[in-house]
Amino acid sequence: MTPTDGQARSIYTLTLEWVSWVAATPDQLEDPVRPVTRIELLDHVETAFDGGPASRDALLAAAVESNARPDVIALLHRLPDRDFRQLRDLWKEMADVPIDA
Figure (cartoon, one colour):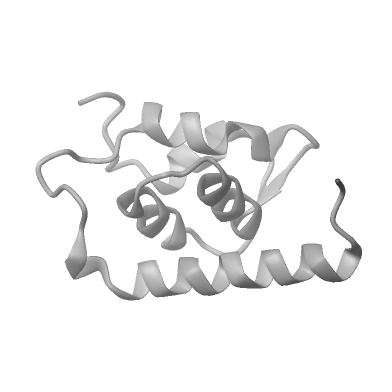
């Protein structure tokens, strides 16, 4: 079943509200011992680039849809609000994020 335009907007709005809440509470990190890595980010946002450039909101929505942990969501929320042409563009903004744990 495909959602109607109104339902899709409602889901998108709820997703962004949830993302804002998660990003607003970074002190409640799920697992401070396990840092977010670029590989983990890739696993959660890769589909956002299927149609071309991806906005920060599209990256956040893809991460939420793939059940990313709150630490991943919070990290994506710190990205500037712009379009990213390819995944490699994210690494320029997240130079401090390790490739692997």
